[in-house]
Image (cartoon, rainbow, N blue to C red; front, side, top):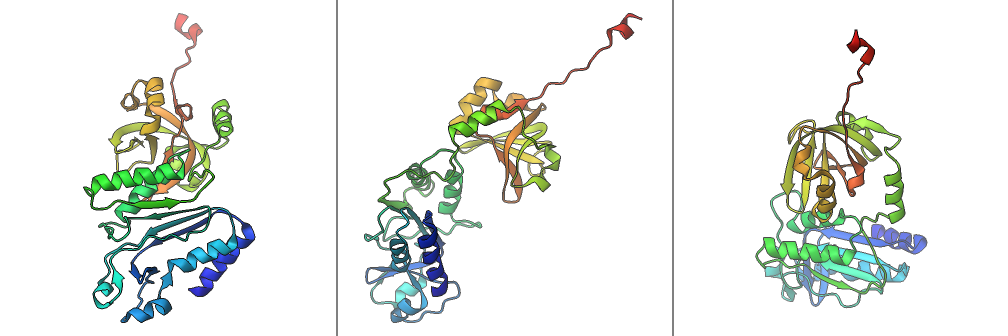
Length: 303
């Protein structure tokens, strides 16, 4: 583990890129220091923490030495830990870190001294909310974490409130779409790759124009789903429209439900969530309603 951390620090130092450290699991504070507990770690005594776990300070020291300018640290580690009962100087949750490197934003899944929920699925409630916010285009990282905090506070009725500290001086977006890029997309009717939605699987990760029939429109929290060709869960492809962009779509189509049983083409990257293929349609110009007509031979009609 020490070797991996050393390599991580060297990569940051050499590349001078944005550092990202995300940890999900058990964490514990002892004598003012935060420790991350490795999987299958067997720790009986508090004195073993320094030798059998990883201190958060160790990670931050590597970032500080790399002097790479910007770092993101996310700790979904404030889980209830049974080891606390047998340790003298430990407390539940993690403690607030005050000596972060310059240009660092650090987020805890809950406020210092409290514990976070594990949830009953693959991801914790914190991680689920964060995944949604990370996919929103042109949203600054501070706003993303604010939205996660608001959502979790609501879901847990105030029992879990994420906490963030930041010394960032620049802007950072998990998903940045330049205005110039949008203009290019608007001026291009379709991409070079045009496929039927039923053929989407081999094109995972590619920027395409995918066409199919809308058979189901579902309004969910923060977004609207358009299932193509078949109803959920058998859809060929799902088109996602964020609530922040919904007004432009409604202005263009009247209402997204009006697209049911109509053929559309969507332009975007094919991504995947829980095994289902999807396209985030970030702009109403990237969704086209396809019209059909039949060419008539007037001479034949006159005979």
